[in-house]
Amino acid sequence: MKVIGNFINEIKEELQKITYPEKAAVINATKSIAIIVFFTAIYMEILDFLIKSIFRYVLKINI
Image 1 (cartoon, helix red, strand yellow):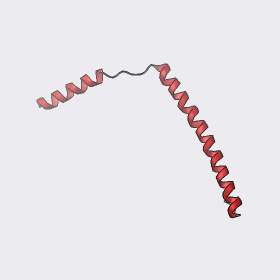
Image 2 (tube, rainbow, N blue to C red):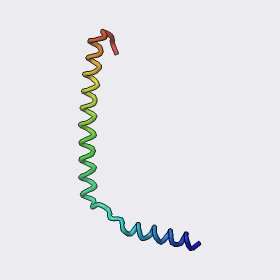
Image 3 (cartoon, rainbow, N blue to C red):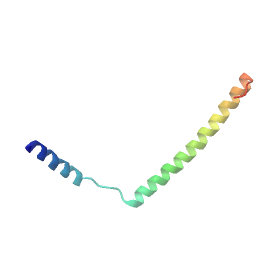
Image 4 (spheres, one colour):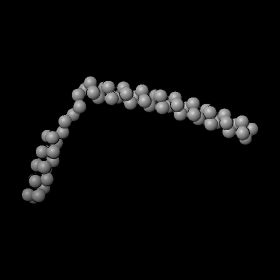
């Protein structure tokens, strides 16, 4: 039982060492990620359209 007690005490000590980012930093990071995801999605959609158009032209089929 002493081993379990030591383990729990170590967990408590480690949890006290945690530092959380400030709210403003989290909000700014979230906005940045949302913007990056948005523009990446647009880029991928354009790339998909171009590749699909090339295949239609080369293969003369409708996808």
